[in-house]
Length: 503
Image (tube, rainbow, N blue to C red; front, side, top):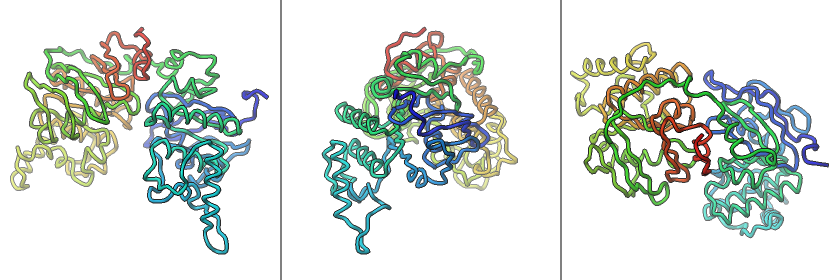
């Protein structure tokens, strides 16, 4: 019977999931069949991770139905999903490093004989699993001593030990060599031949077309399309991923762009990025786009002095600089608004006004006596500029919405009066109204002559706000686009390592 005619092993009907009023998934319908590898495709923020967490019992959907073998199921925990035969192999494997390979495969399910764990049986069964996978791996070795690829093989063996019906592989090749990738492909073929359904998530189109039979595309949390990979081209997939009109949704105020301000040449790090070069001009918004693992945030952290071991040349206002610490970067006129505002951007248990003035305490005085009025004046100025919604400036940041927390972090770094401000995912996870306020404020910043580096996984945001776009792929600059030359298809193609010309 052809694979397309086999009955579904897992079916999603109308699956929805909301966080803080924002739809991460909205009415998603997907069919997964036994013996097939389905590529789950979508740009960053499309809803892929939320879908995986829903399938594996980490999240419970707000609406919709999961059906396994035609029967509705509802997983209250990852253990329930695993017991039903649904398991995931993640890019970052989660195992007990101090335990052996065999112990990790059977942890929580160890066979018992005469009241004691039967270690000999565990090791025999683990060896049989690796023999079935045709992988040579010592079952007594500690997991902490394994390579990334070997850890993936342990997770696959664990899935086989539990008679997995569906195996989800989430960016499994990100840290693998070419030889290890080919080995993984062979194992996927084995799983399919045994009737296991595989969901394969990757931003690499060459991998998708190599290993998958069919595809499902998500965009903005919604189902867009599905079909056989034999019936579609890479460029058509890219169009399905990004198909939006972006310039209407992100109107950009025109600003006068001046001479070069920040020039980065051959910036390199032994493990994170290599030979990165770009120029930022006065009054310019320079967008940085790339898929997971492209190295965008790592480059920005290096410019802010957070990363040791960096080589290359950086000039600011024509003067050679290389910040070795955040305080040094601030002194040079570089500010960095991090992606993780809750852990790295703001002190949630401190008042708004203390957060905003934290980086400039040396300017206004470290002691509370005498600084209160000045601190309140500075905080009020940025709160008004950013349209911050709070009951009072002494309110703790933890009590604010995600969008307003982000505005506090923006105000905090703008208070340093920087020449260059790096915004890393500035609108991630905030509502549409707050996004609009942040975008308006970014336009105001460049109109005043400030230069902005905008790092974003939201392609419409980059296309709608940036004057030029630098696209990274695997730690290197893949391509640079002028605003008028950048199309969604061409930018995503470059981020995926393709050579498609801009339309």
